[in-house]
Length: 204
Image (tube, rainbow, N blue to C red):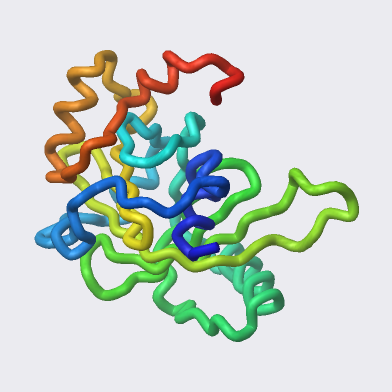
């Protein structure tokens, strides 16, 4: 299974079972051109996905935080023990994303604004006891800020997500589309978070 499948599975529910497909026509090179991004601007709030180009999304808030030394050291210890051949450039660690309980993604700065290599630690809490060790995967991610909104793109499977702070979530489909259009993402399968509300619990 490809690297991008794991990050999207970790970050946005149910993608583990999806085949790889292209959801946006915008390339990562196009998306990151002239991008503005500063981790310090996103760690003050919880974020919610309001528009997405992907099979489905995790409806819970996404948490971003700066990395305290002790927290990074604990993360490094697990990754280095389970996947010693990865040898990440830990000195480039910029921030952490927690898309759901049991999932942590440390972002390593790639040298361009908004460009990061994500190291994903995915706890296998759904497994029977004894619970196996976490899964460790890599992902090539891009972030961009426009006004008070953010977009994230996964370069492997060309999925993309637009997020707003949970206290500023749009109240209409039209507003979601208007915000999403600011990021220049092109695709035919985009949907807003109102789509999730229209689904039954079984479909989710």
